[in-house]
Every structure is written in C-alpha cells, then in structure tokens.
Length: 251
Image (cartoon, rainbow, N blue to C red; front, side):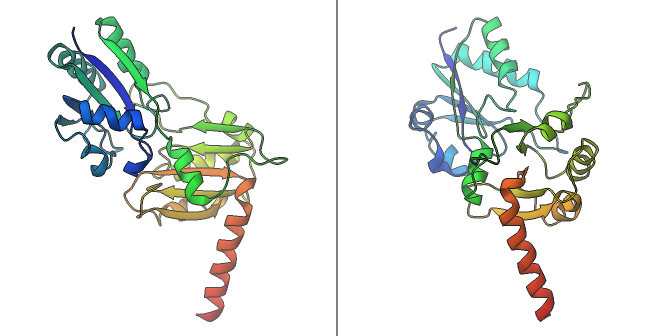
C-alpha cells in the first residue's frame, strides 16, 4: 500500500471552520470519500480530487460501513492521498474507529485530522458556553440512536447525571429523549434548545422545556439537528417564552 488515508473533520457545516490542515489535505487529495452532510463549499476545496459520496442519513438509503472500509483500502492502493471527510470531528460519533481498525488491519497508513464538533458550533450559535462557573462543571455527549444489530444502551443515565448534555442526531428522536430523560429523573421544566444546521446561515434555534421536546422538534426542518439540555440555557428558553407570550397578547 503506497497511499495514506486521512480521516478529516469537516466541522459543523461552515467551510471556513475547517482547520488549515484539513484545507491543505483537501487541496492535495487524489480522492475524497465524504459524508452526506459535508457542505459543498468544503468539497470545492478538493478541486483536483475524485469525490465519492458515502453518506449516512437517518431513515435513508446509506452506504454500508464495511463497503466504505473496503473502498478506503482499495483507494490507498491506487492513490497517494486519500481523504475520508466526516462531518464534525471524526472521533465523536463518526464511526472512525471502525475505519481505523480496518485500515490498520490491511496495512494502510492512517492519520486523523480533528474538526470542530457540532456541539461547539451550536454553542457558538447560541452564544452560551456548555460550561459555566458555579452551575455547569460537567458535560456529556450522547446519542439515543441505536444502529441495526446493536444492543440497547442506557444513554439516559449518564445524560441525566451531567450538568449539561449534548444529544447528537436528536431531531428525529425527540420523544425518546424526552421520555428517557424524564424517566432518569430530570424535571419537565429543564431548559433545552434544538440547534439545526449549526454554523450555517440557515441555522435554526428552537428553545423549549424538556417536557415540550416533541412539539419543539416539529418546528425543525430536514437539516442535521442536535439538542442541548441544561440549566445554562434557562435565559434563552425564558426569553423565548416571553416573546411567545407577547405575541399571543397582541394577536
């Protein structure tokens, strides 16, 4: 094998949040295997590369992971610079370990290039830190989704134990998240915010209380959405509630 496979984080969406190393590798790439959620402006940096879509979207036809692994191994035999471009950071809910293990087992050189996780892009959009002195000293990153053939996971227990929790791939899981966190002991009044299309001009922020998640999720579009839950978002949710009450009074 003569080539190197780079697992590169594309960040939450906006192309100018790519790291310098990521941008340089895209410019040098011979072939790029990219997720469905990678922004076209980021892909445009790979102007000299063959681009292969291997994305996964919930509820849609997706490329099998074992086939992606094989494509990466085969590409490394033909190309010097192979980029596997993943949304956010490759090492957080990006199935990077499966690809790393397959590449190493095949004797392929592999390097990881970190990216800005969607959690940090969403926090920037909200202008609210995940941590806050005196009120939030712990953060949990979880997903309630369970893949085909996987065993169930008690995601709600560590989520409820953290001061602030970020739930990835949350837009289609609102009822599961609400019921799980309520059953784990969180109050229905706990503030939460859905962030859709983080870091992009089309981003959408939907504040709500934990007990209102299903209704809030119905306001989302088709973009990738995550959910942040914690008392640090009380001012954001309270402001949205005041705005709603004012609109009702003037209606």
